[in-house]
Length: 147
Image 1: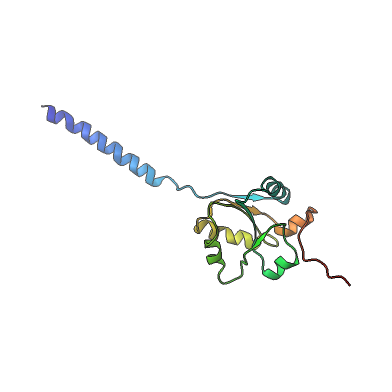
Image 2 (image 1 turned 90 degrees about the vertical axis):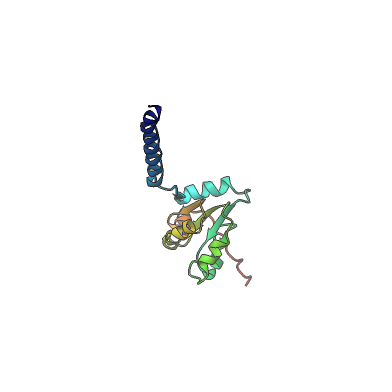
């Protein structure tokens, strides 16, 4: 008789295990959150991390745009380059990135690429360097040649 009593318990345990497995499958997978920042927030973030080697300001404009002026200490990876995705794939995924372009369009389009390639700590400068300059924040530019 004890054998019959154990069957309902086994069935209940199996049902509970199946239910838990299904709930875990249905749960959304955590994906990295991208934080959109306005220029003032981005400037504060840069100041906070200015001595942090694990924080990178990433300018995804063309090399010509970058040369004309960029945020201090920025690294340039050209969004329009045919190897953009492979360049992003080479980034250290443990680092935190502040990504920007001219107006925010290209950087917005780049965000799914960062996510797909496993770069999980990403901030986005909404409005790009245009918004940055509109706030009066400085940019680095090549020195002006002497006359």
